[in-house]
Image 1 (cartoon, rainbow, N blue to C red):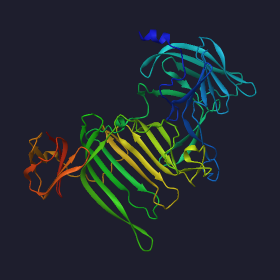
Image 2: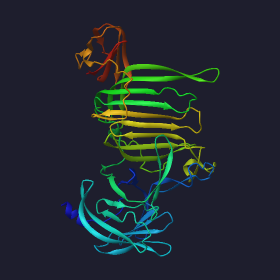
Image 3: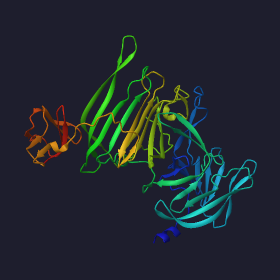
Image 4: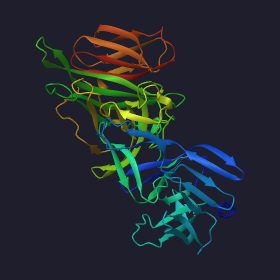
Length: 500
């Protein structure tokens, strides 16, 4: 059945109804997503999203157009002709031809240089192959040139009837490779020249392989997962100690609609406060806190960001634009990961009279500035950073998350933070579920405080100076799921409470 469907399809490079994701050999992820089209005669032209490209050295902050809005690696557009030719238009408005209807052994002109040298493609293979878990008919083209001094990277390309582009070069910079703007750690930007192949690793509709992430994927914690967030400030005259935030997942619950997840977490924080002395010097005081918190994440099936990798998009603000999303891959202690980063930058239109959303040319705000956020499936936000528009303004900081998940440790769980005394068996509620009241037993000495929170984190009931056991009236609370936390200066514990 599926083979007959494949036979009835035509080979193609672009599917306007889905996003395609590709990786290079440098672990970066690129995307193609059609956002507009037009039809002239019988030719259909597709246009992908815009990206941000660098005009000059990044430190040349006085350039009037350091960065400009331009087309993605797919090129300025692709023209789909009825005869099977797909014509990609590169940066210089030259044509790159891909004949999707070429037969085995057929040769066609792919690209012509200004001196009339050329690159040709020959169909060397037509075969079935499994691409991202789906059986597909794949056509392979080998590239040849009449000038041996030209570097053909890649030396072959592949397209599929179902997949579209499988293995390809950058159309925008072809035949000279590609340049992409990426950041490392907190916002420091690099243009990376690259000449090589782009390999299909994911697609949407349906979602398969490496794609941009949903909140459900990012915030999929497990009981026992540990996270350690270390915040370091960079702009103080004297170096303060880092702020530390340790969390361990105790319990996990979903809402009835399955679109919100709740986590009970043990938390131990150590943070500093800045004190400005009359003489202008800064000193720091450190305080610590041990408690339990209820974290929740909503809209689980929404994407973390609506942008695609490399996509430039404007934020509704006259001073800056939120312009980049980045996907990349890597390893931590031998375990592979995929991270998605979004980046907000302060870049000013070169013409100050031009509204930001109409600007095509940008200059630096004296230095790259803004906030970057990087997320990882199952671990939430793993890196958040800011770099201010000037030094010593208290705007430069990084928050790095180490984690222990499923026995895999990435980074360092700060052992100097002593875990709080947690023992859920010390706290007992009964009956549970209940309607009017419940009894509690808390096997810990001290003056106890009992708090009841609803699933949104709102405190709905609080009792102070309780003994180690007693009865609590909850007749005024509505039916639903709650979390009861009992604590004193020595210990605390949490229980899920269901009121009918």
